[in-house]
Image (tube, rainbow, N blue to C red):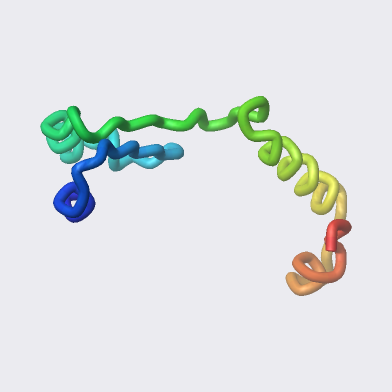
Length: 84
């Protein structure tokens, strides 16, 4: 972050998905000290309305893996995937 701040004068947006570093005690003083330039935006942990691909990915995984047995890891990853 310090390198980015040194190379630009534009406002910065830190968008994070469940990462702990923006909320850690070591990082908070830095973000507060640069609050005029850095804005942190945490993403929700699960938001299918905001990200329809999340719902599709969950459904695809369930259809591909639930209630099935695989003789080998290769068969799991390559042969039995319905979306290949």
